[in-house]
Length: 180
Image 1 (cartoon, rainbow, N blue to C red):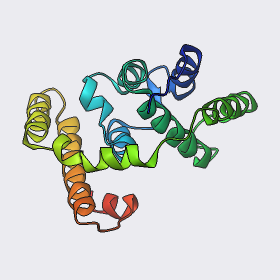
Image 2 (image 1 turned 180 degrees about the vertical axis):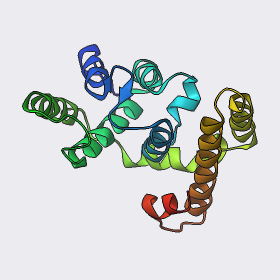
Image 3 (image 1 turned 180 degrees about the horizontal axis):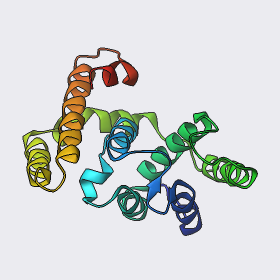
Image 4 (image 1 turned 90 degrees about the horizontal axis):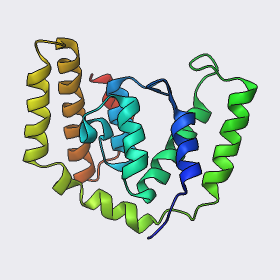
């Protein structure tokens, strides 16, 4: 599917979701889980930048189909956030409605395209990916032990999800998060 998101919409996506390096109310660990669930990519792991810079780089450089999918999932997430978790005011809600309307003009994302991505998860989630994540954790131990522990928990969560997906076992993210 060859879809092209124009420059204005990409800019609008970046500005709406990324406020001074904070992507909505996500922590480093929750953005990894969210993006992996949405598009089967840990964007922060892929670009090795802060969550805000990783998000912007993803919007600029990755496939527009994936950008649209993640953006629509983020819109849905934002819509379901309680009023107290983010500053939701009339201006922000107006921008939300404008962004939603603009993104919904793009063609629907092909189900086959994303099922193909899911089927290719095994090739993405291989031993070299796990080795890379372990290497990142080890390099973080001295400077930021808590981030290293968080990265280890994320890796375990992704492993569990991968196994459950491969075995076609249904689960909810909240049930998996209980273990962590």
